[in-house]
Amino acid sequence: SQQGEEDPQALSIQEGENATMNCSYKTSINNLQWYRQNSGRGLVHLILIRSNEREKHSGRLRVTLDTSKKSSSLLITASRAADTASYFCATAAGAGSYQLTFGKGTKLSVIP
Amino acid sequence: KAGVTQTPRYLIKTRGQQVTLSCSPISGHRSVSWYQQTPGQGLQFLFEYFSETQRNKGNFPGRFSGRQFSNSRSEMNVSTLELGDSALYLCASRDPVGQSGNEQFFGPGTRLTVL
Image (cartoon, rainbow over all chains, first blue to last red; front, side):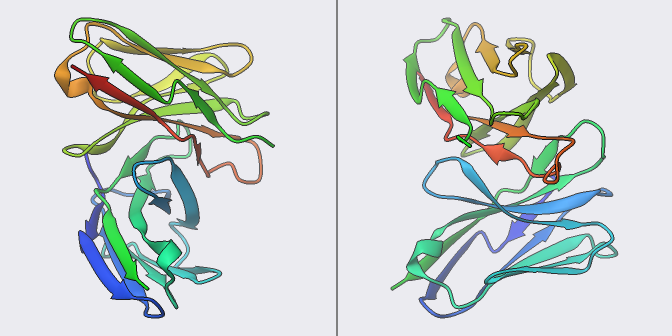
């Protein structure tokens, strides 16, 4: 079953603008991760945020986590055409067996 | 290090046949997970193997099975194929005891089409 729900489902912006994607989930988590997928290819890991963290940065990426609202956001600053892809959030419930539950993703289009 | 490799990349089968997909994890990674991606259901967890043992299984029928070998390579098998099995099958590996233990590295996937 899908735990994460990304919002919006699709986003179109101009190059240089910022893109914000949101993710909501239903159960308690150990950590939340964001992945990027280009045109039906494999997933690329972007960033992981643990349940006891509130914000994390990596290059042009900024992720926030609000466990009280069971939600996360991914901000991509100064977007580039190469950022065009689908973005998925994935949650991991436990520290033992490692099963990721993915949302349906946000399709981002960055127009040059 | 070489990334996760999956073979074959594309596969066309007919209903009722069976198929075996292969995954070679990143060297040193002992955990391998499989996911199915379809337009309707999105990304769904199939199973995870660690040191040749299945540690967790998703909500899929028994037609879906897998195994892991002593060199950590993994195979998944789907028997009696149905049209709905058409999907991108993704394999991911991780190093549970390494610094990036929580990060899963995905392969390019095998695109299975069932006719």
